[in-house]
Image (tube, rainbow, N blue to C red; front, side, top):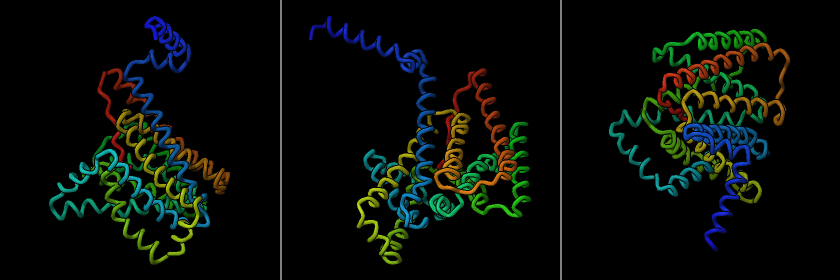
Length: 340
């Protein structure tokens, strides 16, 4: 093709692209803004994927929530190992584990694993056992608990906005306890034990992917033992149905994809922006619980839950204030380091 025609065609393509709103915005943005856009898109995608996984148990009925959890752990292990092998990163993760020389280091590594198992079980069990709203509320309360854990265990100073956030959340929880004369164990388990898992993994200096490989590998014999000896009819049922087998395979793939996009977003975005984007997940879970899953939502819950949501808005305002302060002072980005 003549050079003149190539030049004309490339000029026409570039002119067409510049007429597109997003393309013109993208080309006008600097490198940091474009990186921010990519990070935000990855964060939105990861939270959407977690929302899809939340109602996956309903797609796999008549399997129970526990059985779906067993299949998820097995399919996640296959998908995750396959992913790190394809990327050539398996040796990297094994080297991290080889550096754990003492019994104390290895025991410390395994200590948070039961929390991981219980949280993934609850995530699969709750949506089909009328606990979807309660678990979603636990995820709403989780960042507030992280703030409290940082204050109590690490001596982190709280801003006025953070104290307001904690205060509104405490009042909201108290109102809910007075209204129902109880508080959901599912809510307490999510917001009470997940911070322990995250903090322990962070103190260990273990990457999220390495920790996930350890946790899933430890559960592998349990999953296989359950399917082979405890409930072989469950194995026959899934393996004998092309649709259920495809759903189980996609369950593992989507789980790993959700984890990967979440980790990529955490490495790209400033920690405050990533923290604010993380609130999308409980919003999606809550919406799915009261619409698709049909969980009950009483009008009286609006008062207590509304106060908790106000507290979350104060946390978001705190993040926005910090982000603006960093920009004014030209401080480098602090990338998110969430372990999930």
